[in-house]
Length: 355
Image 1 (cartoon, rainbow, N blue to C red):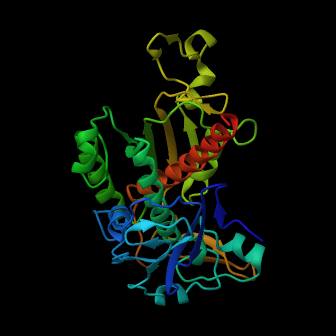
Image 2 (tube, rainbow, N blue to C red; image 1 turned 90 degrees about the horizontal axis):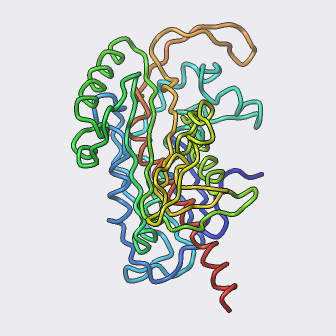
């Protein structure tokens, strides 16, 4: 049995459920002597915690991280790092009503089919709350990437059909939706208010930009860099699609349009999204992630119970209108984890080949 761990040389294992005592992550493969404090991790967790913004769940979690192992006197020791985040604002009572009902769009039916048992409280392990461990691990990965001058920026480019028409990186931290277009952000917030009143939810698109990634990261044939990035991002529950560079637009291009010309200063455009042949080429890595609407909505929906008897339900409880922008930090974290893993793999290869 598996599926709870990710990575090769830099490996993470998340654990915990939405309404359990706590959640966390164990990180194996972090090198020693990296400066790391709880504050380094907390600033990333604060960006994804619930209870922020107009469309966010009213569940109030401080998401305070505790470092249980792997550091000494403010530095990593090279041993496994164990991080714990306690659940503090749990209310399982709304879930009692539909504990024998399969909620549409949720993992209830498939978890029951796989395990024959499921934690119906908030979705258990399938809840987006699981991602708190990913973000904590991503904070450690980002500390490593800082030393390599690699920077990851995740931002909202579409929400509810409203698209950002420009990318102003200074604008991203100025609005709750982390959108690089101020006018689009205001329109998105209005859309959230409208859909919230209707009792429905919204999907959107997150773009992730990686700057400073050196050429050479990626392992042909099956561990291509974009393949591992896609798997990492698709492992996030609400994600239904991932594209790199020009993405699906390449299907409508000619080869003369799609190929990125090379000049003395490097690539002259970047439809490849910074990756060729599964290996980073030194240009910016550009990824886009399609995020589905939150399935927990208060509108009446048709489904069945555990005896396959048709029923209808309206979902009560504390839920986001959209996974955006909290999912943005999860996307950044997963990209960071993949890049560190491939960075270590490349360093191991370079070290061996130069001996």
